[in-house]
Amino acid sequence: PKYLQEDQSEECKKFLSTLPKEKGWMESTIYNYQGFWSSSRAIQGVIACQQQFQAQDSDIILVTSPKSGTVWLKSLLFALVNRNNHPIFEKDHPLLLKNPHDLVLFLELDLYADGQVPDFSSFTSPRLLATHVPFASLPKSVKNSRTKLVYLCRNPRDTFISMWNFANNLRLDNHKDINSIEEMFDHFCKGVSLYGPFWNQVLDYWKESIENPDKVFFLMYEEIKKQPKIQLKRLAEFLECPFSIEEENCGVVDEILRMCSFENLRNLEVNTHGKMSAGVANKNFFRRGKVGDWKNYFTVEMNDKLNHIIEQKFQGSGLKF
Ligand code: A3P
Image 1 (cartoon, rainbow, N blue to C red):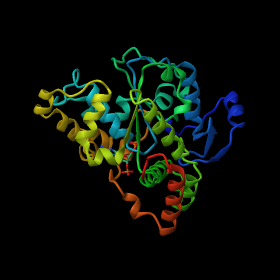
Image 2 (cartoon, protein in one colour):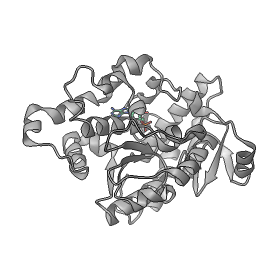
Image 3 (cartoon, rainbow, N blue to C red):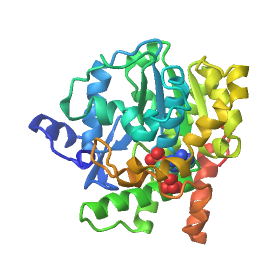
C-alpha cells in the first residue's frame, strides 16, 4: 500500500540522512523531524503541507495521536458537520458507503503525500481535515487563522497496544516479521512511536486547549465512551453548530452516535471487505474498540515502567491516565 511506501528522491534521501533514525513500527525506518518520529513518506508530506497549506477561518482540523480512535472521531465530525447536506437518517449516507478515512483526509498522509498538489475545489465549507502533526509543526496558516482544532487522545497504555497490533497486522499483510511487544514497548517508552513522543504531543495540545479554548478542543477517547451524548454535544457547541431542541427530540444525537459506533462501522461491508484509498484494508481500523484492553497484554514490569513514566511526564499538568 501507498501508506508504507518508502521511495525517496535523491534530495530527500540526502535530507533524511541528516535526521536521527530508528527502526520503524511498520516501515523499516522512522526519522525524527522537528522533534517527532515519523515515516519518510509522512515527513515529506508534512514539509509540503507546512510550505503550501493555506488554512481558512472556517476549516476544522482533527488532530490525533495515532490509534487514539481517529476513525471514530472522523466519522462523528463528518456526521455532525454535514448533517444539513447529508441528513443523518438517509439510507445512502456517505458513512455507510465509505470508510471515514476516505471522507476526511489527512493533510500529510493523503492530500500533500507523494508530491501531490491537492485540489480542494470539491470541498464544501467548512473543510474537514485531519493530521497527526504536533502543535509546533502545524503549518503557520493554521495557527494564524481562526481554524478550529479538535484534538483526540487516548490512554497511552491502550494507544500502545492498539499501535502494536495495527503495525503487526500491516507487517503481516506485507509479508514482514512481526515486532515483539517487548521491543516496541521499549520504543514507546523512549518516545519512539509514530508522531511521538506520545506525552509531548498530548501535553502541547492540552496546554493550547487551556490557553486558547476557542481554538483547540481537547477530547479523550475514554470520556466519549463514558458520556457519548455529553461529549458530542460539547463538540457541536465548540464547532458552533449546536443541536437544536427539535434535533434532540427527533433523536439526531442518538442516531449520529449509533451510526458511528464501533459495532455499526465495523460491520459495514465497506469496512469488512474494503480498502482505503491509501491501500490499507479497512478492517485494520476496527480491532476491539474497548477501554482497558492493555490489561490483557501488560506484564507487572511493563505496568510499573509505564506508570512511572506517565507520572513523571504528566505531573502537575492536570491530565490523568
Ligand atoms: P483498538 O486497537 O484498541 O481496538 P485510529 O482510528 O486512531 O487508528 O484508532 C483505532 C482504534 O480505535 C482501534 O482501537 C479501533 O478499534 C478503535 N475504534 C475504531 N472505531 C471505533 C469506534 N467507532 N468507537 C470506538 N473505538 C473505535
